[in-house]
Amino acid sequence: MKKGKNILIWVLVIAFAFSVAGCASTDTKTADSSDASAAVDNEAAADSVTEPEYIIRYAFTSPQDSQVGKIAEGFKERVETLSNGRIEVQMFPDAQLGDKLANLESLRAGDLEMCDASAADMSGYNGRWSVFSFPYMFDDAREMLDVVRSEDVFTKLDADATAAGFKVITFADF
Image 1 (cartoon, helix red, strand yellow):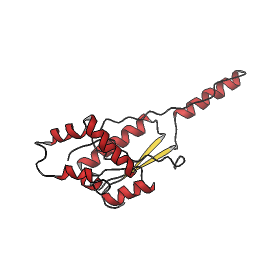
Image 2 (spheres, one colour):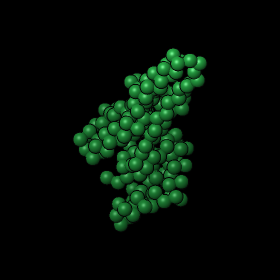
Image 3 (cartoon, one colour):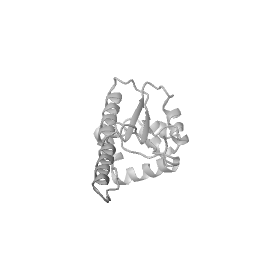
């Protein structure tokens, strides 16, 4: 279920505060009371969407019962709840759809909307990402996250990812 050729390409998702809000529009212009009740019925039907309008296919290589899998489950619940069922998240854990590089290529091809990837994985698309693989570059995970989430660094990495056909949502450390 794709809407046109605009496919959400999301990468590097794990620990995040993400929200999606669904909106429904109904025509409430009415000529008489029967039209008014029909508009109310349409509005009620729009509020209880049973068929999703959009599906996010989210692949990750970790097991479903891992930390990554639990965070992915929280993401799924949040998106589906906040979109009132308009968005469905289908999860593919345990490398069901391939390793991280295969998932990244599936993103670029439009076969997936979301996956997780490491800086090392992204370095195949732009060498700048390789710097995060140097040992002892940061004192701890907090320092690394502060650096990659800083405006200057995030802007550069996001531009690199966009040029390669991806969209960075956030960075995390595991």
